[in-house]
Image (cartoon, rainbow, N blue to C red; front, top):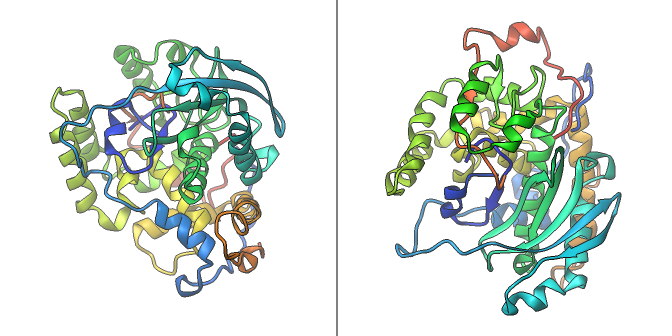
Length: 378
């Protein structure tokens, strides 16, 4: 959903009821061309990760489904590559073993720390181990306790077995940090303290000259503002009418509306989950950018993946994530080793609406020629 940091449910549209799921420097030179193989030769490690993200998030298999309760189990403080000082929560007896499973908790953090380079995750100050049961919310990000300038990464300890899905979701959640941190969007402490105040949200949005993330006003050269102006300005009004349906008691029209919206714009989204919100779209597109070859075509969804190649720092970050992926998955997930050599060459608490200020302002006028955003956190 919208505008606060987010969680990407593995296959559950129902998570949308809660609301959804930096690194920039001046980039005056063109990004290097990607030399990753074509889809026919896509290394299995990446093909499997992309496959894990596929599914029909609009399909409600059980009409009597009741969203499970989420339990926070342990909160760690993050210091570089290490997690320390665990604070254990009071949990039901049936979750006591998971709360004390330090080995797997450390394993989950190690996976994320291997995927994402240290300099790209400095905004994370807490690591939260939680659970809402298997195959529900795999991971999420949110503000750290009492500090909207820092973030908490949340991982469900019940969902560690499917490494491909976990890797995809961790990169998706990192993309929220990459595109919503304070270098990308101004942090509004008043909104951080009152995230459900719709009047306050609308007032803040009305005074934002650029894309309003729901947490604050995006900066003119931020990834998310450029992405929104290029890919969402023409469809946002249509989407907002659907997004407003989530406040109704019966959510069926909302789900159906999102499904129809996605089906009407199949060439614009990398998958159906991307259509739920602009911030989900950029996060999902980033994950596809990381794990897919550079697309050969020029559909809008392919343009979204190629958007990130415009920033050399993101191409370099992609390479680092792929190297980390190979280190973690090539010999640990399957009995037969998977070949990664080919590509070594290189919120939970979310507001429900997004707004754009000053529709008449042309983004190309702000960034003549090649758009080169200034430095900011993801």
